[in-house]
Image (tube, rainbow, N blue to C red; front, top):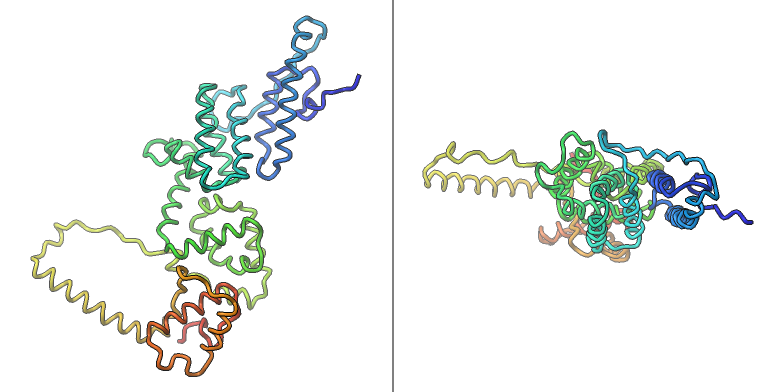
Length: 382
């Protein structure tokens, strides 16, 4: 007779293992597997689990009748990271997380909330503690970067499990501490300029498929974002992917690294100033005429300062690129740089047109379409 117990071997169990041992072994192996990185391995494990259950059910009658005398199978331990939580033999939460991970691998961002809601709804009709166990497993998977579509999934889970509500998370829970950090860093991210955010998101999405020469040169911006919002950033890229990106930048020639360090986003884009909070109005009780004079003085000061700034803008560096405009093609960038390289390139050109031309040139430089001639993107003059 051919030995057909391969499924038991895949789970690390003897042929006489019972259903309880199969479920425990499956849960233990599932926790040590990354379904996103090894979908084929997860499918094999799932197939072995289902085949083992069918094997146990088919041989249950023989076992009950005493045809085969078998010793009890030691249960595979299932470690629980939360102290004081009773370990259960139910694997519905782990199964649901595995199925969700596979579904997310081929899903769009818009369908993530629907997939999560469906999984949570199905768990509520089963084991009473399954939704809570699933929430803990989901947080662990998000924190360990072991599940795809983490950014969209975190947003969907925040609403599904009410993580954003005050008092919803226990302060002593390490999972709650991590969620609080991500929520805080998400607010910091939204405080940044929308144009820079769209550019950085495009870079993060491009880097998910691998780091090419273009993305490698743009590491200085992402490196500073990693210093400020590290937990939020891992919802897009794993720590290993970020290290690969950094290593690719460090392998570039020194002159290229220095050039793109100068072209990086200004400090104001990464660390915008925040208001210290408005003071109470009763501390500044002034008559209406005084407020009008104060407003007029401030406006006059603003106009004078703005005029001085405009007159000396060459000492403050070049204007930031406008990411709301459509980027120029390489051929258009070549023509632009040829025109700006002329000695009288800005002769007779209105000030606004000069600023726009420099912004387009800076955008061409950031996109890697040749270097700007004539020092358009050079360092500010002393």
